[in-house]
Length: 299
Image 1 (cartoon, rainbow, N blue to C red):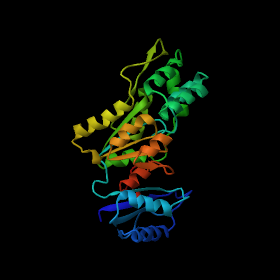
Image 2: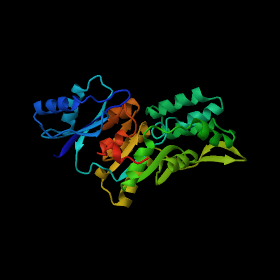
Image 3: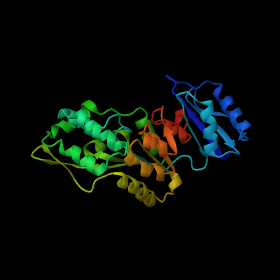
Image 4: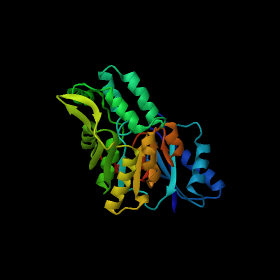
């Protein structure tokens, strides 16, 4: 069949009941779809339901009725080109669970102040470049050694991040980490997770301290979009072969341009605009969206 509806739960918090496949299949059939045999990508966790005769958006609308009130993510799409060949990912609050600039600010006793600006910028309420410069300026004279301390003590990897990157890389995809954060952190996160390359902003230093400035040009929404486009062209890939994931307003242009653009536990503006969303699961959800069964995961 030419289309598939994938539903993903959490085996510890919201496992998928065995009755869910037949229930969804019946709902799709009542709407006029031809439905194939459901396929479990992971028992109690991820289920594929092949179908034809409905658009993906119509199939998702039907699934939303059946799944109402359940902590389950879903995506309907064409089966052709489902496994992507390029991943461009955000870092802060996507591949890792924190915003590094907020954690750095905590060492200066400014976390509450800086976090509020970060939140506003990620919601798209402030100009990203201006907000970044303003926040970095407040970190002036912070010792350079704090960067490593922050990474060691504060940075935690999002569940499923390593499996997502390493599984896609093992299957021939190119993986790039492109962040509005800082190279000190992206270089270490990229190495741990298995990204092929990383790009981010450079904190400027002098005499062992942060100068309160960031090198230009600023890596923001435009750079993320151009990274997706540039890497696609370099690798000879069409847009449908690409995957972009992020949570903030500066991720939205690349999310909208990718073949599979995913808003991951995202800010409301991003979640509302993105074609695909992960509201409940971890980053392995993106592997299930691409049709990978759990036994194929690389970690």
